[in-house]
Length: 341
Image (tube, rainbow, N blue to C red; front, side, top):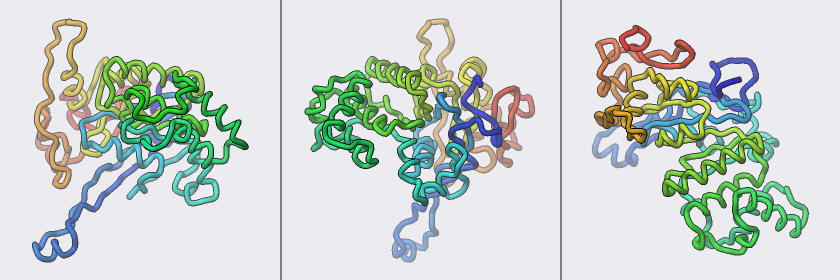
């Protein structure tokens, strides 16, 4: 198929499917503080009803401002968080059932995560040999020390490093090289699905391009599927096949890359794209993103974007828009549904 997204419930063509995912965090003060200050318990709906599909060998990117729930979705997919509602389906099986069974280790081999900060995600006391070899040992994928050394060398070559680097420590590498080590570690179990949580945001622009090209090459060679989390739309345009736009824990638009960048429909998507610098000097006006993200502890009624939306009306302020398919995209917006945009 031509895109990585599918309507919910489409027949088994998806490797990964998120169905109505929600995650609520209890951020209440300690019990005694609540008692003395007479405060109620407080909850944050970090993710609220998110659903999408990703096909084998394809990339879905999630974008949005900081705090919109992108990283929480990433952790829900790999089982680092347990959903409050909804489920994750991997290769036709609910992951919560598999992770509670004897097949948990096999599932974890098939999906891995690359974290945002290569300076924090690598143990500074371990040599690269031990960092990359750890998943091989934990999953019992090597039989002896000689095979372990050989596999680590192959993984380092695969990400553009030298086998001689295995004896060095993380502090002896640049940020881009450290992220390559993180990718090598993630590839050690021969996964089919990688969740990439802003893997290039801590890197210089020129180094970002090198890492992104490496990830695209690895995807082509190994048939990998990616969920790529980012707030950088230029990066998303380079690597994705389809894009989901999140706002305050909800998906507001989901479309193939060409459709989203060529003709964005949701006002928030348009706002994000209008803020991108015009590198081609076409004369297009650059409009900064307007307004502030609402307090997630007290989100707006109706459509959560209505305080910042130039097209909002009384319905937007009172009624939450439903998720629907319109003209080849999926969107939640009253203004688009009613033809006001």
